[in-house]
Length: 486
Image 1 (cartoon, one colour):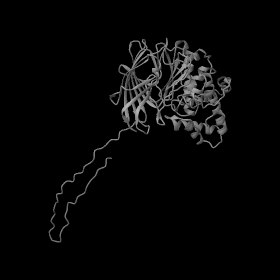
Image 2 (cartoon, one colour):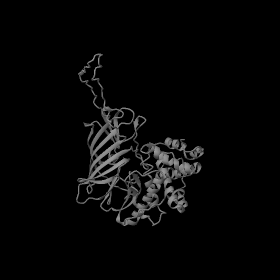
Image 3 (cartoon, helix red, strand yellow):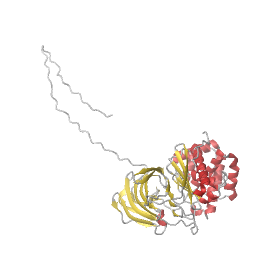
Image 4 (cartoon, one colour):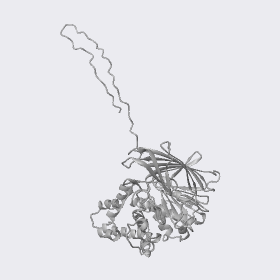
C-alpha cells in the first residue's frame, strides 16, 4: 500500500601589451621626415601553469561486489582513496576488518598501495596493518586496492552472546562492517578498539561510497536494501552515498517494500509478508521522525532512508539504513505506544547522532546514545504530547536508571545495565540540562552542535564547549550528578 506524505509540523584572462613609439620627434627644419624604427620583437616567456592537486576532504570507497546469494559468498574488488589529513607523515595504515572476526570468513588475496603490491602486511583479528614503502606526506593522497572474498557465517542467535547481524539466515543476508576501512587517526595513533559483548566499538571516519552490486544468479536476484541511492549501471546496480559512515546491504527474496516521500528523501520499509501492517507503521514512524528531527536539529542529508526488518533480536543503525528487530514487529499493537514505534524513532535519530555527528562509540557512547534516546521524547512531545508521560514511564523510569553516564562500553557490566545507564539515565541528564538552561538555549545548542561537528568525530569536550556558547546559566551541579570525569 502506498502511503501518502504527511506534514506534521509547520514548521580573464590577463592580456599584457607593450606600447612602442613609431615616430621620431621632428627637427627644426622646413621638412619633416618620418622615420619608422623597426624594433626587434620582445620575447615574453610565460611560465607553464602548474595545477595544484585537489586533495579531497575525506576518504572514498569503491566496492565492485558480486554476491552469490544461495552459496552465501561475496567477492569484492575494493579501491580506497585516502587523503592524509593527519598533519604528519604516516609510515603505515591501519584498517578495521570486522569480517575477520569469524573463522574462515574473510579471505584476502591481494593488496596494493599506489600500484605497489604489499605482502608484508599484518592481519590480526579485526586489525589489518599495511606498512608503506614510502611515507605518505601530509595533504597527499594514497590509493589502495584490495581483492577479497567473504564466506558468510550463519546468524546464529541462540549460541551468540550478542545479536548476530552480519551473515545470513533462512530469510535474509546482511552485509554490515563487511569491507576493510581505514580507521581514524588521533593523537599520533590509529583508533581501533576491541569488540565487546554489548555496545559498539568501531569509530567511523567520514567517507563517500560507490558500490557496484550484481548477483551470480542474475535471473533470480533478491530484493536489496542498501545505504546508497540506486541507479542501473550496465549489468549491475550502482549505489552512491556521499558523506556517510558505514555502508550496509541487506537482501532477501522475501522482502516486500513500501515507501513514502518526505521532502527530498524517499523512505523505504523492507519487511516480510507477515508483517505488512507493522512494516508500514515503522515506515510512518521513521518518516515522521525524519521530518521532526530535520526541523528541530537540521536537515537530513541523504536521498534515501531504509528501514529493514532484522532476523535478529536487536536494532542497529548504519548510514541511511537501519535494522529493526523482528521481535518489535511481533509486538506491534496498532498504536504508537510500543517498541516498534519507539525504536524506529530511535534508530532514525541516529542519522543525526552517529551519521552526521560521529563519536568514539567505545569510549564515549553517551554522546550518541543519550542524545538519540532523548530524541525519542522530542518526537513524542512534538506529535503525540499526550503520550509523553507514558514514554517516560514505559521507556525510561520502569528500569530505574542510575549511574554515571560517561562510561565506556567496557564498563557497562552487561547489556541491560549498560543501556540503563547510557541510554536511559542519559535521557534524564538531557532532561535536567534542558530544564536548567531553557528550551531556547537547549535547541539552539543542539542545532549548533550539529552544525559545528557535522561530518566530524565529536567528543564530550566539544559538546560542553558548544553548550557554553549558548548559555551563561550554571549547570555544573547537573553535570556532577551524571558524570564522574568532569
